[in-house]
Image 1 (cartoon, rainbow, N blue to C red):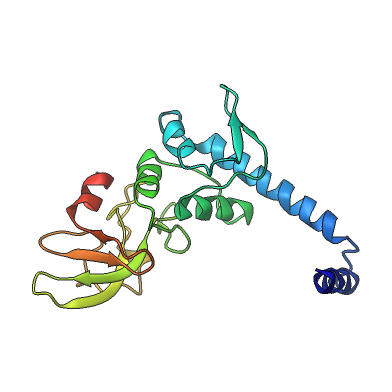
Image 2 (cartoon, one colour; image 1 turned 90 degrees about the horizontal axis):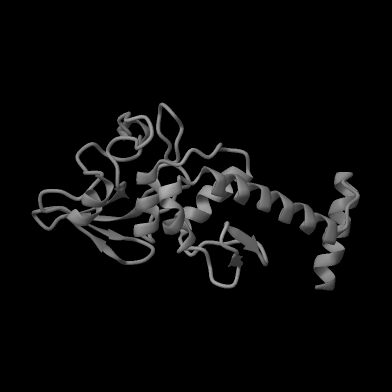
Length: 195
């Protein structure tokens, strides 16, 4: 801990910030809190219960009118954490279609870090893994629960330059997907959830 404190003080001197580690953490906590408030205000009313079910236990008390944070709120779904992080970094102003929240909350393996809709820049949930075709051949690829953006209805395939055209984005016609991180398998239910 002492080594970390010395490193922080040297960083503050060299960067001209002149702040203590405690002040830095207070600023980061305020920044994270503003991002969470912005995110929660953008959640559609019909999805409020769905999102609140994935707040980590012990982070809040529900006072009837909404959340009262006892510490920094955190979610048990990585996709929700990714969306808040994008807001915190100033990379995305939250506009949350219900279909996006439903997909991220339903499938814990979905992330929301890199692919974006080419038209409206909405972060698209995805999972990295392996596709298995009807002939039992396997390919590395990604799974997206949407072939069209849930916000503006644009085709999302142009946002995926690294994904070959012969691979599906959603499971269909005998294709299955196995997630790289969680090991879960997905078939037709991913496509059905996003409709």
